[in-house]
Amino acid sequence: MKRYPRFYLAIASLILVACTRSHPPQQPTPQLKVVTLNDTFKTAIRQTVYVPVYSHIYSEDRTQKIDLAVTLSIRNTDLTHPIIIVAVNYYNTSGALVRKYLEQPVELGALVSTDFVVDRDDTSGGVGANFIVEWVAQKQVSDPAIESIMINTRGNQGLSFVSQGRVIKSRGLNRNITRQSPNSATEQQLPKKIPESVPR
Image 1 (cartoon, one colour):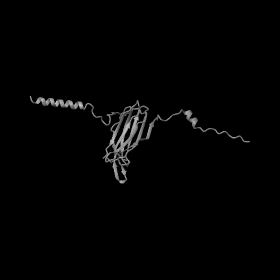
Image 2: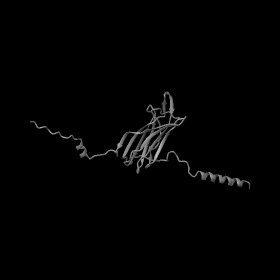
Image 3: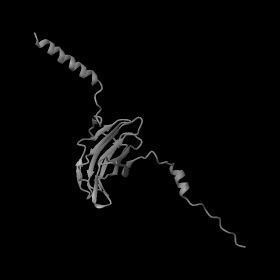
Image 4: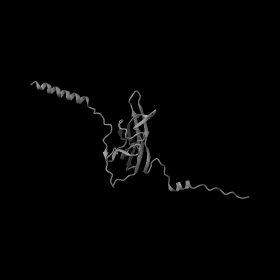
């Protein structure tokens, strides 16, 4: 009979813990939908983005290094349509592939963000490391915001900075380019005829 009070006490403790943990901690990266790109998949736009990153930087001279944690952030800025991240590859200073972060393409919904992390102790990339990100979309979408954030909080001072990605290859229409009809473009490219002078 003496076991029952302990049993009820254990149950009460579990209920108390469950109540205090009603909001589970959020995962740093949302669970993304895996997508299969086959012959029936029609691509409206495809881009390859180069993102400079630094696994370390130099302080005062080349013998003093500051190791940095790297976060690659990819944000779908389109209000309506998803984009598909095809590849996220990490390269070192020599241009050699260090790591592939994706085994399969994943879908990034409208206004959804995701991130990929290089630990501070991972110095395999070097000062000239980079990410190559490839993404596609089946609709015309606004360009995603792709950037890297480097940070080190050891010691008395914190260090952080951001590096923006840049498009190095693009296929498909660009919504930011104003397109003209063939006739108007031809008319603008033709030089104006200079009137001939009349001899006197």
